[in-house]
Amino acid sequence: MVSLSGGQDSGTCLFWAQSQYEHVEAVSLDYGQRHRIELDCATRLADIAGVTHTVLQLGSAFRQIGSSSLTDESIDSRWDATGTGNHYAARHGLPSSFVPGRNVVLLGYGAAHAVVRGATTLITGVCSTDEAGYPDCRITFIRAYENALREALAEPGFQITAPLLDKTKSETWKLAHQLGCVNEIIEHTHSCYHGDRNNRFDWGYGCGQCPACTTRATGWTENATTRRQSHRENTEKIRRQL
Ligand SMILES: [Zn+2]
Image 1 (tube, rainbow, N blue to C red):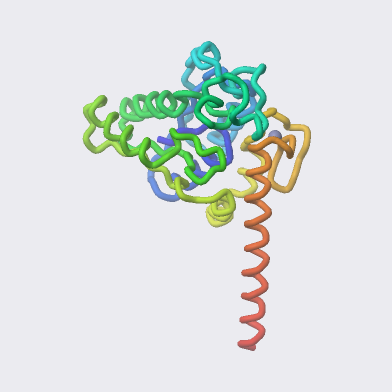
Image 2: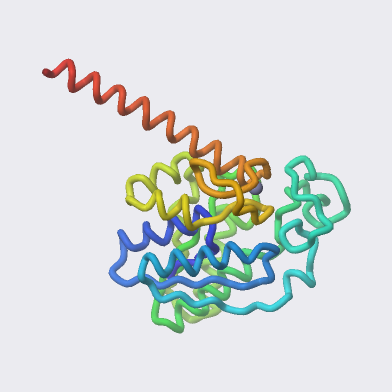
């Protein structure tokens, strides 16, 4: 079962899962995200991959809790907003895009849905190398929560698999190239904090300036440079052999 948000990381995980498992399904959570485009992307990706996709309705709980730029329009989403304001993330030195409890809820519902559907593996795109440094994307949380869910669901074999945990954004682009899904990731995933679909870059759609766009774009450029270098080296090697 893939926890599919509609972003680059979980989208890549969907295609990775298809390369690893015989049967794959996807689950998304509608938690009142400021931008519905992410959920539309998740639905589109699941459709392209040909997997059963369920969108669980959480209602407005995260909006009611607030304290994040992703669920509250009054909070600045710029990177340098870290440490300013009186919201939860600022008090903890985290980016304002931090949604308190998001992965507790996302992975909790995802796990419940997974085991009911007969799956004992939940695949998540969490990534600990992001500049964001969200505490619920770290290995310590993932392993502790995996143990808690095993107990809670009476499934001793339940696993949370996070294939991108230690990957940089550049490496995640590389994986998409290897999986042959790079065009799907460009066209049908969404990262931009402003929900911008008007501007199309090499790496996909977005405002091009928010932290999420910047991270995605930098990773794209780094990977493209590496690909060009290895292409050049391979060409030279072949030339020498001729
Ligand atoms: Zn953006």
